[in-house]
Image (cartoon, rainbow, N blue to C red; front, top):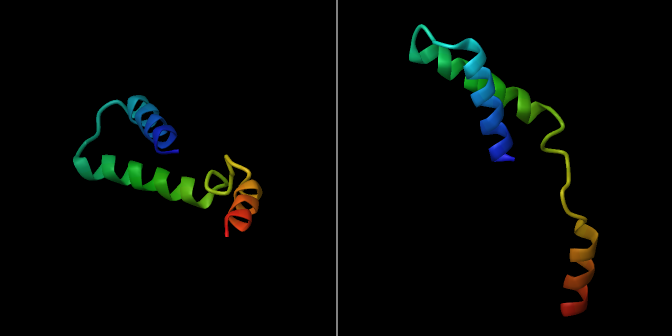
Length: 60
């Protein structure tokens, strides 16, 4: 997920080109992070955790 976020920020900074100051670059990065955390990127599951729960129950 972090790699995807880094790629997204890199792409957006290339579109802008040059920033007037470091605060504007920081604002762009912070805005993108806020957007990503409010969206469904964090809701996506990459693993089926029910199988892990079954294995933990059998091991105990």
